[in-house]
Length: 174
Image (cartoon, rainbow, N blue to C red):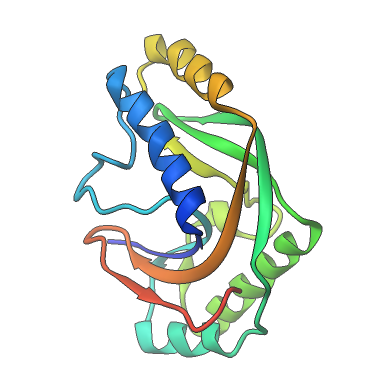
């Protein structure tokens, strides 16, 4: 089981990402829409935790400064090992600083983070495909390219249990 600190999108942006997921699924490319429990939200993860004390983590995140909603534009896609593909957003400059501040607070709360979310290693991304085979990558890339560019708006944050799909809204955007 893992826990993720996620930035979530406004209704319009959430709907647009789900529309992309539907297009990919229609071509037989697995997405978060059908992955595991099927209750995944389109999101941008600030951190993925391998071990944590939930109360300490929630308190640490609540103590971080409030950030304003923001928009980001996606012009391309990324592929990761294991058949995973994601949208590559252009983030505002302060978002990387806020992600690093979030990681520091999580560490101070005793959480153990996945190494890909350490400052300097974090690659901002929004999941598109979860298990595309090598032969599906060109189709996935075409579908995503035809869908872009897209502007997405972050308007809230949550702590999400990725195994069960349960979420706990955070008091403000981080």
